Image (cartoon, rainbow, N blue to C red; front, side):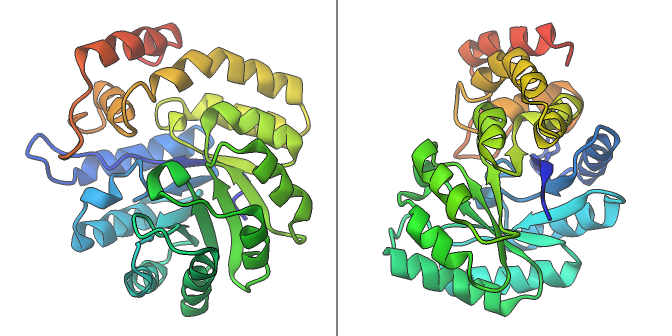
Length: 290
């Protein structure tokens, strides 16, 4: 359902640090005009942790309203199962096509706890749930064994895998039931994982270069892996530069330079440093993004 390119969009802010709805709508248009198959609001890149509940729901409402072609895979996770269920219900009621739900962070649940957490979410809504595994942020990993067990729960449709563990991801690809999608959560690994059998990528870089990332995902999906590799190589400097500081600090800066919001995240995230700008600006300029 979410094959191809999904862009984990930023949440643009005004200079007064409020959600910039005009910039958000223009960003949705920019993504659709340049080939994004799905738009992912309120993920890590969208600073979901820094949004109030009302802002979180409003951002998704705006994206659902503005999107005319792309699917909307809305972030709706929490480290509390009851909160994740409540937020998932609210998002589903807005008309999102699916829910992206991060594995419970900070609390470090057991694998059984992770399984039961996602089972409760899937049973609470009638839209597909995409599990988001990113141990570097959550402090715990969803093992391949647990993920394959969850793939059997009705309503759990895919996993966004950002563990960086290629053996683990390959195990999920090889063992998954028919119809269950595996999405790369790392831009730099997207072409490699799609060659291995993954179905798409949830991308940070495509905020600023959706056309190029769409072409990469399309080439890989059509089996033109040499073309996908060449695009990935051309974008590799950008991939590295966008993570020179904590995501989404660099991509917020880049999008601010492109006219989508102030370019400044909310505390405790800070603006991109001068050293970071010296790494990112040349990559943006060489690709003709600025």
